[in-house]
Length: 79
Image (tube, rainbow, N blue to C red; front, side, top):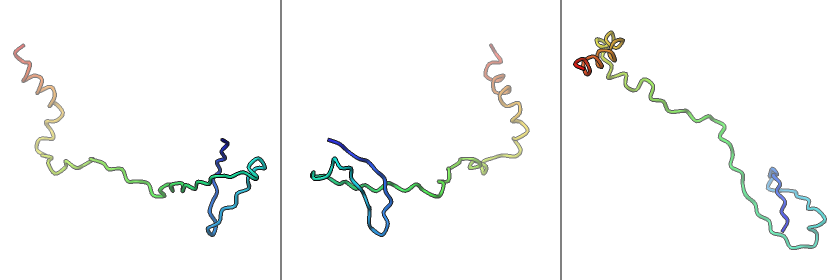
């Protein structure tokens, strides 16, 4: 079985398609599939940036610089 794949634009509900001579006089099957259109608008990416801002405690922000060292020191200070 031979197949031809060709993408054409439909104009006024009509598609013109010229078949090669080897198809002349034969019974053929025509399958029409619409190609999905690409979205013209970019999907907005969801971001979690800033979503925890309401839980921020400004009075603890100066302690953040040494938070890891303090935490490790408390946990492993007795070793």
